[in-house]
Image (cartoon, rainbow, N blue to C red; front, top):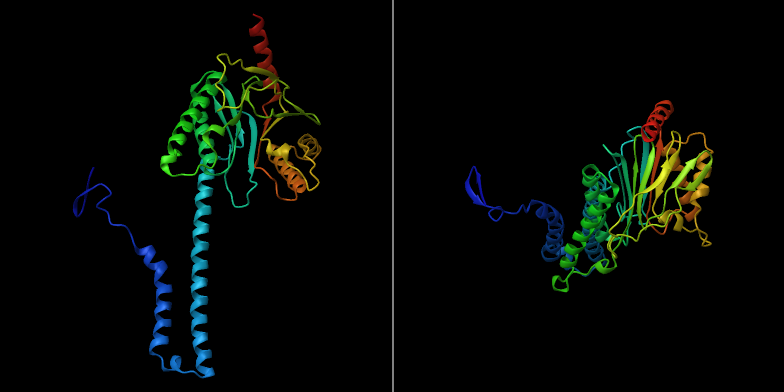
Length: 360
């Protein structure tokens, strides 16, 4: 590739000189201090004397130089840590971007709680999009942690964000996710081949992803496909109950999808009712005595509060979970709360019209 600039043609990136200014700035001050210490030792008459005052002066000089070097190194490492956290925050905003507060009359709130204080993103994934087929939601959990889990979550989420708009049925959306995951794992297997010299975080053969797909149409009908993921809780009145007790399919990855993928009809989500999607880290969290966290109890208590908006429910559940675990959950936790805030009169009229059309 030929690039034209003011100095004439250059070929690709090979003709560009690397910028050495940051390296020079980083090494300049320690090098200057080192030179000063050496000059003091070699040229200063006081440094060659054996008296107590001379020794104290020499010790003071080298102590000052050493302290300055340590302080400079600490500032450099702190700056790099801040830069890494900014990069992680930018990656999180792309991978797990916050859903809009409202989608087609549905109020939504979502958040993730990381088990690692130093981690900004992990293997949990969620997304909600409004499409011509209804509001479509995905919640998933990648086995393992680290960069491999982040890459797998990105592959699944990227496929969902396209397939949710393109595919007319949830079954075809799920098959798109399965193909994207298989393609990603094949590429990872080549990258982690022993010849590459890389040590895999999680072997590809042990990789799997649990995925829950939901679709809520304009009439409030809820359709679902579940591959090894916990079913969401339905909050109706003051009760928190599982949306359904149907057996899920196996997780994506280890086994191929069956030829027939019947989409499960889970009834309606009337105005005022709420769905809570979560990853298994919420129900697997334990306290110091080994007792599991009761997510249904936390949800029921949240429903008795003054405000039952998705944001308020999310905040109260996370507060209860952190109190239960002593502030240190053993696994990542992701929650997505979705409430039907559509106009009850319009919803009832639409449901009646749909019923008449079905009867005809």
